[in-house]
Image 1: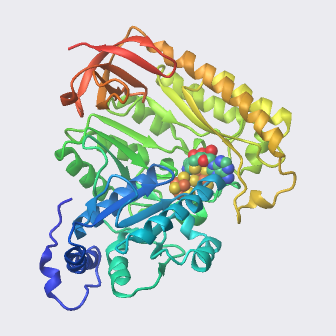
Image 2: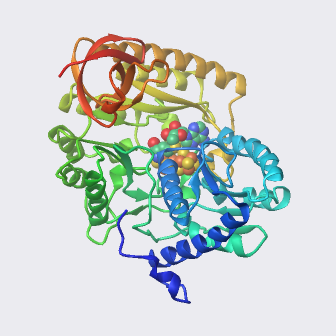
Image 3: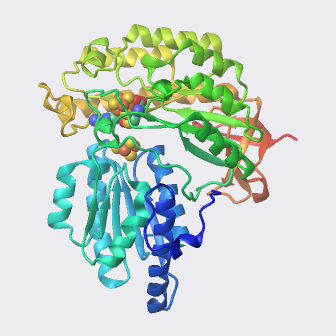
Length: 481
Ligand code: SAH
Ligand code: SF4
Ligand code: F3S
């Protein structure tokens, strides 16, 4: 990303107070310190950032990579690198356990590589008991930071280089958004764009509001400037990211609705597709439905987490809508956009969920016919209201419901997927097919995957493809130019 900040900061003795200038100063300092280490090692030093969790974490990782590249680290293919960052997730317990499991492996690598440094950041680090455990039993970790200060990586790295003990910097919350830091994007042709951070909804099962802090919207000028510069850089598709994009802009000095932001983003030349996630059903406005229907660049796809189909459970979850309101909303969406693809998240086994409640969830699945659904076993997260609710559901009961739900969800998704057969759709080509190098793989506007014969030079291009046959959850096609 372009900024006016240059190497000149290395000349000044005092770190500037203002951001992002301060971080550019520390990137230069870190670069000097790293240069000496590279000289000692007699080889380039490499980095690897491993992302656990959602698109928001993936976007944060791109920022971490941008900073490390600017400092002079070279990207490694795997975790046998000289600087490894785990950007962690803690939304469910298994995400959390995976991190501990892999840390053991990192320790074994570090024993063999004296240059190796290990950093942990992201949502899991915002949990005090996690940090305590790391301090006690994982002393080989060099740096621990949280979700609110990822922009400070360069400054923290300088500290790691200068002091040879564990550096820990976790903030409880922040009202600050630092713009204009370097970013290393995973794809040249599509990108996530944060429009807001944090969450104020406090669904009773969810740890995200505790680890991501209060909701903060970025200023529309900053968002549109970023999308404009991505477009000039060849990006054709953007995904606007927030835990609840429908409440975007409510707390800005000059409030702006998400629908208005979408329309503005669509005016940016070069951008062909706009996606967004996630939408909370309670805040989905008529204005947004209209904006989606009237703006061709906005993809006809909506991820609309249901969580449960039982009004009783939805109330205990603090979701603030009923089964009927959800179904009615789906009706309005389909009326405005008959071909829209709807996807969802569902939790089974929330405390107190009865067989009847579960059947209500299945009933919504039958009625809505989701194009796909992520299904989760309820996971008890420390500190959330649901963790201390009575009537936690036994594992076997949860698993049985999960299996029944998954089967139904998959059968319906397969049927929904097939409805485009015989049509020709624009496909944004993403990569050479992993199994068959004569094919390329891309996505339609509704997010379905299509494989078709084509050259690698098509990557990043939008091409019309005839959908020959549906194979479950994807299509085989032929290019039609
Ligand atoms: N902000 C988004 C979701 C973020 S978390 C939203 O409101 O939709 C992604 C998904 O993880 C959630 O939709 C939910 O289905 C699931 N999830 C969150 N906490 C969970 C928990 N404690 N156990 C199981 N699944 C959970
Ligand atoms: Fe979690 Fe609910 Fe916020 Fe989504 S809206 S992040 S599920 S608290
Ligand atoms: Fe996980 Fe944090 Fe995302 S807990 S789901 S990485 S916001």
